[in-house]
Length: 162
Image (cartoon, rainbow, N blue to C red):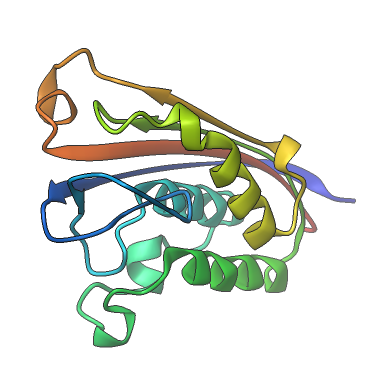
């Protein structure tokens, strides 16, 4: 009988001027992008860790080590596809839902939410209605408020054969 499990993920990356901004698997026009070994998509990284956590598998940093050059500038959507395959091999029956939040002062995230939901749904082979993405600022407080970085948090509920 399948059981329900919850996973939680969180990620942060620094904003820099010489990189494209990739969030939720889509490119967003902005003056800055996120610095990281891969494309630094904080939203997909948070979702990846949520799924891995729910499955009881090692986190994204262990799956795709930052010192492994084969992952340099990797598309986080492709990495999430690998994670989905690992999860299925470990007994994943279905992803019930994903609830995520992106913390950024700029750019405005809400105009891009539907495109992100559709892209993530395509990667995970689920309906977009199973994905919620919310955006918030930190009211000019902390590194997000100073526009030094962007953070994302995600929770997922899955069914697994245990």
